[in-house]
Length: 74
Image (cartoon, rainbow, N blue to C red; front, top):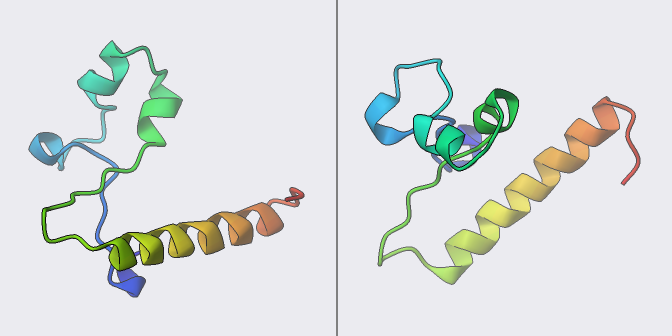
């Protein structure tokens, strides 16, 4: 996503250097695999609808590509 100017993280802001799953996500009942599959986005009051639509579009393209690569149908 960085190549598209979208900055996201797979970990919490306070533990960005850790490879362990987020304790918060674990506390809400997610497995290690599910917790490690989460993506964190930071939004502000300056984030626009257009910016969010672009993020959704990039995610959709990524998932479509990954599914094709993995041989999964849409």
